[in-house]
Length: 287
Image 1 (tube, rainbow, N blue to C red):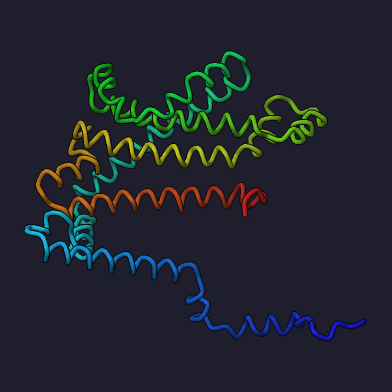
Image 2 (image 1 turned 120 degrees about the vertical axis):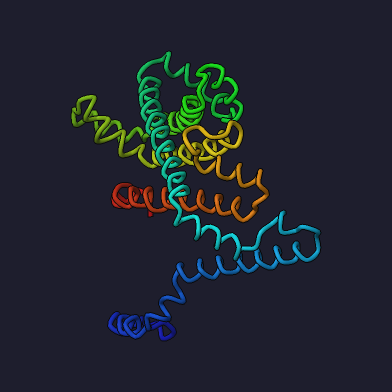
C-alpha cells in the first residue's frame, strides 16, 4: 500500500534549494553570527552597567570601567613594546613550564601503569596534590629556591604536572579490553603496542588533560605574579595587572585581563582545535 501522506523530496530539488540560499542568509544562520550577537549583547550590558555605576556612585569610574575605555586602552597597549614584551614573557614562561609538566606527567604516568609501586604512588599522592592550590605553594617554593623565577617555574609546572599525570593514567587504564586483545593477537611489541593501540585510544583523555593543565598553569602564573610581583625584568601580565590595580587604573586592569583571555582563546581554540582536527576528529573519535 502506497503512503500518500509522505512523499520523499528528490535529492536534486534539495540540492537546488541549498544552492539558492544566499551567502547572507547562510551567515545569519551560522554559529559565527550568533557568537557576534552574544558578544555585542555582553558589551552593551557591560557599558550600561558601567555608566550606571559612574552616575550613581562617587568615583564610580575607579570601580568599574566602561567597555569603550577598556577596549581603547587595550588597543593602545598592543602598540607598545613594553606590553608586547610582557605578553611574550607570559607565553614563554607558560610554554617552558607546560613542557616540563607534560614531560614529567608522561614519565610518571608510564611508571604508574607499568609498576605496582607506581600505581600505589599515584593513588596515594595524586588526589591531594591535584587539589592543592598553586598559590599555596608559593611560600614553600620561595623558601626552597630563593628566586622568584625559579619559584614561578616550580609552581606553574606543578600545576600542569598533576593534571597531565592523572588524565594520562586514566586514559591508558580505560582503554577497552577489546583493543588490548587486538594488539596482543597481532603480536605487537611493547613500543608498537603503545604507539598503535594505547596512545590513540587514550589520546582524547590526554589532550583534555593537557588542555586543563595549561589552563591551570595560566591561572597559577598570574596568581603568583599578583602575589610576589615581577619574576623577571619588567614582569609579565600578572605584574602588569597588579601595577594597574595599585595605581587605580581600572581600564588597564581589565585590558590586562582581556589580553590573558585572548591568549587563552588562541591556545585553546586554535592550537588544540587544530590538533584535535588532525587526530581524534580525523580518526572519528570525536564529532
